[in-house]
Amino acid sequence: MLLQEELSLQQKLEILTDAAKYDVACTSSGSERKGKKGTLGNTVPAGICHSFSADGRCISLLKILLTNQCIYDCRYCVNRRSNDRIRTAFTPDEVCTLTMEFYRRNYIEGLFLSSGVLHSPDYTMELICAALEKLRREHGFRGYIHVKAIPGADPALIRRAGFLADRMSVNLELPTEEGLKALAPGKSREKILLPMRQIQQGIRQGREELALYRKAPAFVPAGQSTQIIVGATPESDYQMISAAESLYRSYGLKRVFYSAFVRVNEDRLLPALPGGPPLLREHRLYQADWLLRYYGFRAEELLSENRPNFNVLLDPKCDWALRHLERFPVEVNRADYYTLLRVPGMGVRSARRIVEARKHGALDFPDLKKLGVVLKRAAYFITCRGKTMYPFRMDRDVIAAGLTGEERRRIWEINERDAYRQLSLFDDFHMNACPSEEDRQAAVWGVM
Image (cartoon, one colour):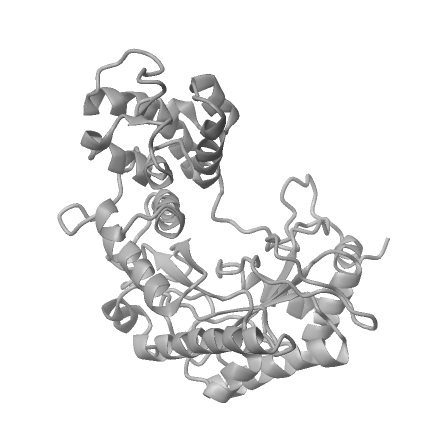
């Protein structure tokens, strides 16, 4: 399919921002680059948002594809080769123009640049590197950049991009090799994991060099991430979370993102979605992922082959606690930090506060509330000075009944709201009338 090169920059922007909306792997915390005289922008460690609204409010990464043309025919992808769509591509100069103009208007704090595969992985990666080099060296841009590494590209190009970007990601897409063969026959797990390993080794080597030479160039300082599609193939939650755990352990990933499958193509190999995208399942996977990264849980503690999917009515931590009532109740004035982390309703911050506060005196339930503990959940699993918050029977069914009331409300919110829909630059959501062409141009270019 031929690229439409005669399109205006605004027309390309409309097409290529819309084409990027299904890629969710784009948070930006973890990198710091201070501004310098003669350059523009900076990057701070605090995370920034990754979208923006119709009226130009910063949310706050410019999220685009370099091109929506692709040599692959992945059945789940809106940009698959066999789809009849308008195809176009930005030039490196156009990527720079958009990024700098949006940044100057304070619409964005950085760039998220992904791409379909144009002609070949090497050709596409060369264009991405050219865009990043122009941004960094010619335009002096020091803001945040997240870029996709193209599987199959020359390792030299991956390395070149790694010294220009803050974060890189290689999308795993599907958790098993069988899933890839069925829905993405042009891709392989080996090709995807190879650049992941290269980025991991580059990050490790870069940190060693920084320890020796303070002015050594940083390689992917904000780490790498990936994305897994949820519900496109029949893998269980246990397989999903086990794959994520393996990636964290073996490849040092910063984040694994989960994307509820949206059926954008009619294909007999794709699952029907009578209830819409599996948003609740995606939500449960994110909750479990948090437990893996910050709470010391392992995948086999949360699920197993005999119990392969998460509870619909309870979050993974509450569900685990109900299955291990022999460990509770926990006395908050004596339990160590890691035991407190396993209590539903207690997070990393509140557990640290408890450990610090009890040095100065015994804690009671009002104190715990002030320290950020969610007592609606924690009350069933803790004691203060040997007493529970209120009398109840330490029985699984009794506790489950008390916990599922709040959880049912949260499930309704997830299922009923339009949560999977990403805001678009040209979205007229909450507007009573469609904006005029003049208004669209004003929103894009900041003309008042």
